[in-house]
Image (cartoon, rainbow, N blue to C red):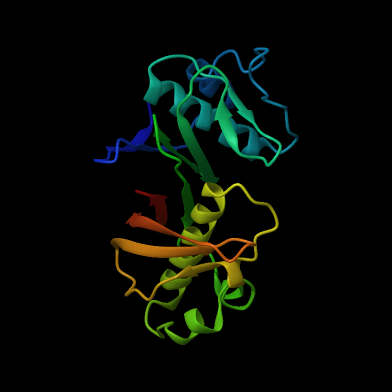
Length: 210
């Protein structure tokens, strides 16, 4: 089973990453019953997207030790139809990642570091965040910022969030692993702080809530 990273956190969260090397037929062995009435596994035309969906379900079955059925609420947030635990999922080319917690709201995001994240600076950062960007390891820093904001977005029940205006990541020095503080400001100007962690494995980055 190609679970390449699994970690149990003090917060009670379980983080797991799957490298997708299988065919659809092979993944179906790890994620059966995707046509079950409790599951909203809607077939998609893109073969890579189908593999990612199957890998997510395989990870969930592996972490929980039983068959689980994945659904999405009206905001697109995933939840398990047959368990009360909180989950968040993410996938990028060739990898799928999940975070699972029995009690706390959680978020996770995974991205390839080799992607060009230069557009993030224009569309998702505040002026204050742009000022602390470093010239060295700039793409890594932008990748961390983007993933961190995606994680916060996944944790809040609000649509149409302005990443540049409503999600602020406090200044940090980009490294191979570290912690972040994020501040989310809702439409009523109420602020919520999030403690985030990140690490790189090979050529990809994972960011999650603690």
